Image 1 (cartoon, chains in turn orange, purple):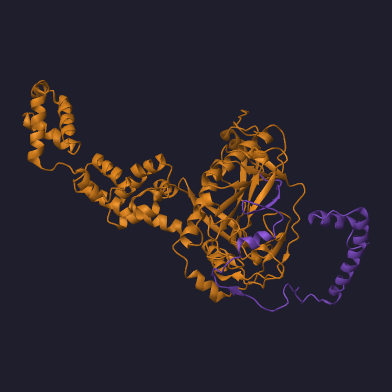
Image 2 (cartoon, each protein chain N blue to C red; image 1 turned 120 degrees about the vertical axis):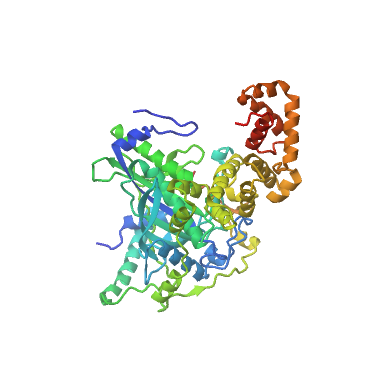
Length: 509
Length: 98
């Protein structure tokens, strides 16, 4: 066993990943919380704007003041039903909200309105693709609840003097509609478990986007994940004890958390120990999980049907009306685009992970050949987005710009190298590709007379090189090509220049 | 055998963050058991074909439209806070969180 340590965190011994999945089979489940992008909160009319000043979007209802009464937001219920339908779930014909009681200052009223044994949607699935294989992830339930407030912890860990520990709570988020999507246990993924987990959350995010029900901005917390995972020896049919990892709040982290828990639990089992059933916290910075509260004292939330709300009873007509609003599902769309663009499943997966699918589609719609559109977004532009730590969609360039660039290259007015210079200009805010070409004078020198003059000048300036070429040393032409490219500011087509040089020197090959 | 034991009451007190003395536990356990027994008599008359009531009105699908209404002025919101810092409710450190 190779014990690895991770710097800067309380570390657990880890088993090498390959050794871990050779000996143990992972079973995992994901609980995903998605904040709906309704204008108002779940049970009151407070606004839901992200980043508002603390405690400016609260009222007696979301503060749980005596005498206030919640009323369900129709748009949130409809969004949840649409999510359930997109995930192939059964929609409950009748169900209720439940009161989940707990003492914790993230809810001012000491309970959260949620759903318990009567979720709005049950028993569905979501197909995801990894390495050209399709994994059908079972959906256990989709239910609707309200989000909690946001706590800021001051003191202790942040370096204040001992004894100054306290928390500051902002209730703007308390009461925002939150949908919880719980998978069935996912089995049989083996070494692909981390990738399948990530692909599931990615696909779920795409579904939410396509439905238009959530911003799904993980960095703003509108999509959050908990990862449950257990291991059992390969060949065994009895599942092991699971851990529940909280705070997994980026796609990359989902993959890392699954991988880490596989390695950590494998090390425990390998050493003859027992995995403890507990809640663990994931740390974005170090990628490790650390133990939180043990599940020995099981929570006692004393759920009961919420007495302030009447039941939900979506009738068949309403459900069918909502079903008719469903968009083409993202995986179906990507399969269709894959055929249309002539790219492989792996290439499409890369485009999905890079957030490029919509951009490529819009570029193709603007007239670019699919291959060229794919090449620019996934090559040069992805590289630049990476370098500047931005998403592709955040780059100051439109699909129409990229389509124009493709056209300029296809028509021979720009070489690939010049096109990259034009890209610099567009990204620097100098205008559209055509404007940058005009302003920077980047167009390929297509004036043959001008090019011939540049070639003659280069030959005159390098008589020795010219002599070698005349003598049959064609390879020496590179020097003259370089000179012409220099004198034209890189605006010449190198292959054409080479031909012209050889022709001029009478060694046309 | 009481329906509600002294241990049950101690457990509920802990969940409710109520510090009850031994005397109070003895006293309340007895009282609460009387209340529970009184309420339990309902089940003597309820037949299996009567579903439990969770809301007094026979209504379903009562909704509000997704419209924003003014929230409380922040000063009114924080007037109810035990302590305030940075326009937030200041509370004892929340345990079990990173």
